[in-house]
Image: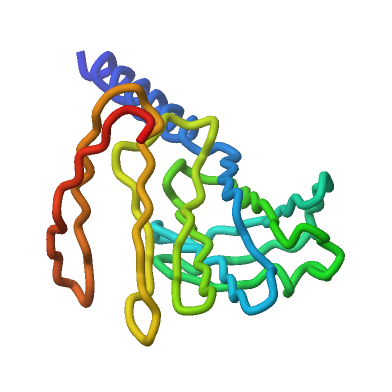
Length: 188
C-alpha cells in the first residue's frame, strides 16, 4: 500500500515538473513604432515581472531590413531598464526614420513586458509590445511617464468586430485609481 502511494506521489511530482517545464518557451514581443525623426526622443522600457534575471535580445527592422545586433540585455528580477536604438545601430542609415523592434527571450509568456515611449514636441505617447503568436490578453500592462510640460495621451484601438469596454486603472507609488470606462464599437 505504501509502495503504491509512494509511486503515485513520484509520478505526480514528475508530471507536475514536466508541465512546468512546458511553460518555458522562446517568446518574441513586437512593437511597430520607434521613431528617429528630428526633434523626437524615443526610449524602450523593458520590465521583468519575475523573481529571476531574464536575458532579452533586441532585433530591429527598418526600410525592408532586419538586423539582430547579437547583444543580450539582462533585465534584473522585478527591474526595469531603458535603452535607445542608437545604443545598437547607426540610426541615420534608416531613411524612413521608423523602426520596428522585436524583443525575444526564453521564459514564461508575460515574464517581460515592454513599451516604446516617445516624446515629440509637446506630446508624449507610448506603444506597447505585443506577442503576435500568443493569445490576445484582456489586460494590457504598460508603464507611462506622466508629468513635466508634456501632454500625455492613452491611445486605445478595438481590433475586434464586437463592442469592447476599456477600464483603465492607474498605479502610482503603490496606490491605484480607476479611470473612466470607455466603450469602443467594433474596429473603432
